[in-house]
Image (cartoon, rainbow, N blue to C red; front, side):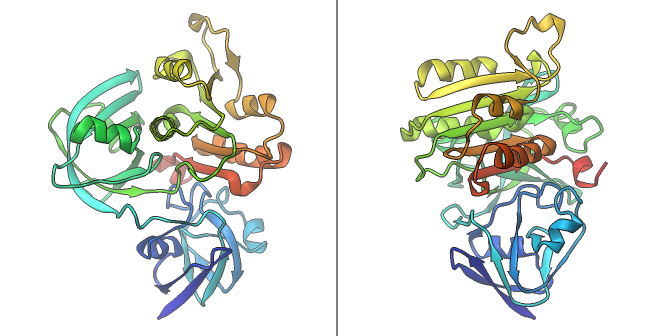
Length: 347
């Protein structure tokens, strides 16, 4: 049985089957609804159900609470339709210009940028013209059927300049993690990895003229770095400030890169923030929670756009506090929460 789905206010429509999730059907139709983890853990795909009924698959209460459901909200990543639907999603974008492709890639280098962060470079097959937007991610297809998602840390312009060797990922070691144990252990140059992408709606809205806040925690810096590279190459000079929150100084694994960009780009500022600075860091910069540093500096965000990427708790706290305390319209908060397997399963 098939149902129709209408999206307000854009007026886009698509049809889907009863056993599909709304998000997967939209992606197959070339319609880019906002999403992050695709596993009911981050809440990035939450939107308003205007008409119709859905059944939610497994998800976490932090992503969609019982109160949210009662208020008419849904998660497109785990909702299946019971009737025709009308949903409200303000961030709808077309994604048909960069089709999702499956391809083999070859590991060209592994560089440990911090004790628990690996910068992985991949060679794309010469036969593929892989297109993506700065900030999007790819998924690794592992042999056992599991998948792991990582944002691309460089812009398509930089990848094109570097040739087919240019795809860069920043991978944090999660001890016991199926994929990251391999990356930090047995993986070596010339290994073949199978990937699929691009995915995600975390990319700069080029047509906007609003000042930009780039907010990252940990390796959430990766897609933010790609966005800065894209802005540089595209000649976008909107006032932009990068806030990067980490535990200690060693976790700011590309601190010098960020400082260099601010030295060269008059429209960009950089504010690193440490939550657990060590005595040996000799840190004289900002401390505390990174999203609170944004609020301290920019108490009025009503005219800004925010792009937040990192730990789910940082993303959800920033979304709640920026909209409630600083007047940021929720439709101008774009997010990509990095969810681990533990995050997805509530452990």
